Length: 221
Image 1 (cartoon, rainbow, N blue to C red):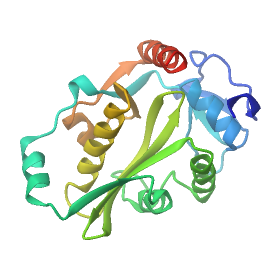
Image 2: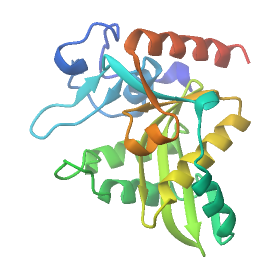
Image 3: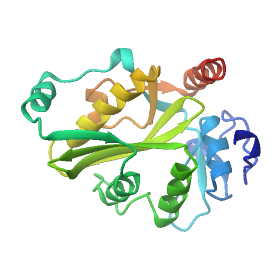
């Protein structure tokens, strides 16, 4: 399918950004454009009243699994709650919707607009997105979703309805991806939760080197 994908944006080198990491303006959020962007380490971030903006920031959040840290309190919590269960890609739409409703400190509204939701649902149907769901007694209480392109997972958003649910989602995501041979994920920005579990900021050049190395591993396996 990769050979049939076409991008609506002719992305420049991801190092050639304008102010604040903006790389390109305009285009559509179709499957081909999203695939091309993520394969180059670029992601969309809509801003009210503007055409679609595409970013390649100077610093990037990553979580290397060798640095992944699960607080002991979270381990005890998971052990004490056998009624909490996990699934993968079983309720992507629901996770996406809940993430769009999650309050964000210092933000009015959400960047997960109706346009973004439609685009990522199509991207999921094409096989390039992934979600982890956390349920308590069959009720969705947390989750995380992201993009999986050319062997690299890029986290987009997570949510929780009960304490620890988003942390559990991230933990389960790392478990699943580790089993598949992944060694790190792109988290774009390092939130306090991600930082507490080993996330860190690296410069763009280091990130692009990691991306290139992972693509090579993906293509040769």
